[in-house]
Length: 387
Image (cartoon, rainbow, N blue to C red; front, side, top):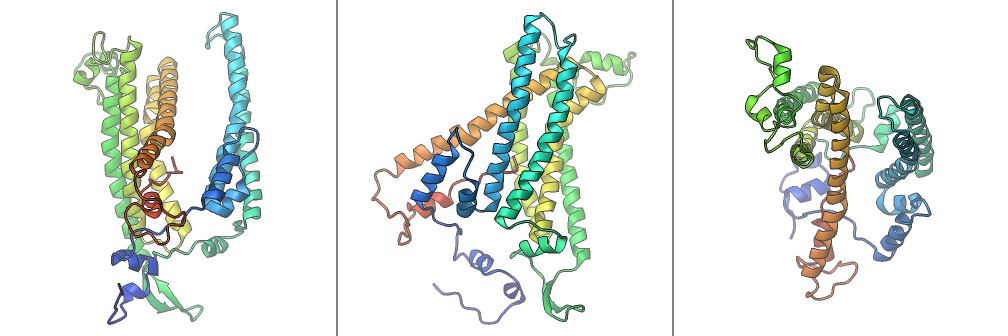
C-alpha cells in the first residue's frame, strides 16, 4: 500500500513519520524484535542472587531508562536490608524483654537510625545516578543540554522564522499551552474530588470514622460530622460484615480499597497521558515533568490521605500503625500478583495457545499472520515504571 499526498499539509510537515503512518492506519505498533540469545543471557545475569544486574548490557539492549530502573531497584534492595535486619533485631529483643513498642527503650534509637539511613540512601543513589549518567552519556549540565536530549517528535506547531536565530522552527504559542494546562488542572481536581469520596467511604467502613467521632465533633448531635456516614460506618460495628474486632473481616475493606486505588491510578494514568499529550509540550523533559506532576499529585492523595487523617485529626498511633502495616502488606501482595504471577499465567496461556501453530522464525520478519512473534510481543502490556 502507498500513501499518496496530493498537497503537503501543515499537519503532516510538522508531524513525525511514525505518527503519520499510525494516523493513517499503515502501522499498528513500532517495536524492536527481541534477540533470544542476548535476552536470555541478560535474564540469567539479572536474576542471579550473587551478582548485581548487568547494567551496561541492559542499557545496550533495552536503553538507558530501563537500565536506570534496574539500577534503582538493586540499590533500594541492598539498602533496605539495613533497616530490615535492624528492625528484626529490635523486634525480637522487644519480645524477649516482654516490652511493647510504646515502652521499648530501643524504639527511639531505631527511629534515629532510620532517619540517618534515609538521608544516606538518597545521597548514595544520587552519586550512583550521576556516575551511571556519565557512563551512559546522558548527563546534562544545563537546561539547554536536556532539551537537546529530548526533542518530542509528536510536538505540533506552525513553521515560522525564529526572530533571534533567523532559522525556521516549529512554534506553538505559550498562552495556548497555559490554557490547556489550566484545563488539565481542573480535570485533575474533579477526579480528585471523586477519589476523595471513595476515601471517605473507606474511612467509614474501616472503622476509622465512627459514632465516637460524631460525638467528639458535636456532643449535642446538632452539627453532623462532615465525613461521618452512619450506614457505611455501621458495617464496621460489632457483628457487621466489616467487623473491626475480627481480623479477617477487617481485612476485606482494606483489600477493596487497595483494588479501588489501583484501579483509579491505572485509569488516571491513561487520562494524565492524554492530557499531557494534549498540552503539546515541545520537549520530552517538559512532557514527562507534566505527566509526573499529575500522577504524583493524584496517586499521593488517594494513597496517603487516610494516613494524614489518622495522624493529624485522629492522632491515634494504634490506628495509624495498623493502617501502615495493612497498606504495606496488601500492596506487596498486589505487586507480587500483578508483576509476577499474572504475567507468568498470561505467558503460559499464550504459549499453550500457540503451541499447535506452525513454527516461526526467530526474527519473524517475513511473518504477516496474527500469530507471529511481533504480534505477540506488541500485545504485551507495558510495564509501568512509575508504580
